[in-house]
Length: 216
Ligand code: ADP
Ligand code: NI
Image (cartoon, rainbow, N blue to C red; front, top):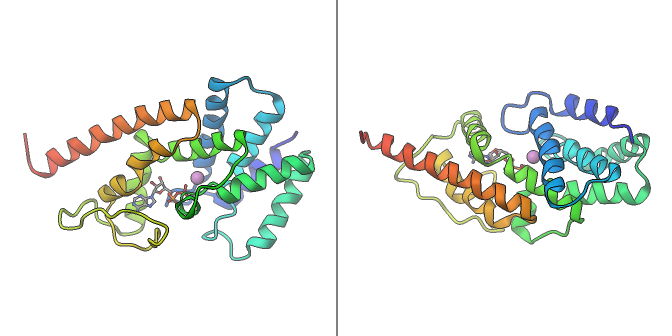
């Protein structure tokens, strides 16, 4: 399997987007997915290639980045064929990247292949910990969202919430989404790391709140 073209396609498509889906994000997801999988079970060269390809491509099919989802899907299949993936591997990659998003799983839990569950966990883990905090504030700034507003209470996100449009603050986003991710992990390795990263974020929010109130 040769992932060179997939890598350069992801780099070209995602670039330096500042609102959370840049090329560095998908590279972190690729390394983390491989490390998580290896923690739970032995890796094979095929599984490594599947984890890396799906991670690198998982945000290129987002409706924010393309108007024509159908032709983007065809483009991805072509790239996967050229990289050396057979038909059933291509099906699994497409299934993983089209069904793993948080918004889709708010509707109902989607079925992913076992290896794909590591990619989904790695993607969610990149919204947690120190990087998760940094990404949340970067997203907040690019959407002109307040850091915090004590008057605005966090809401419960359901399949009826307009996830991208509802009024929120960056601190509320921790309560509305980020603190729930730990419970949504699919894999043992993912669950353990999510727990550590969530504890780190809870400490951050606690310190933030102390400083907000001017406490010494
Ligand atoms: P994905 O497409 O990976 O499921 P999103 O597009 O929702 O996720 O999120 C990308 C990044 O932006 C994540 O780090 C997420 O925490 C952050 N983010 C999304 N919505 C908000 C928000 N309203 N406020 C702050 N950060 C957000
Ligand atoms: Ni992502």
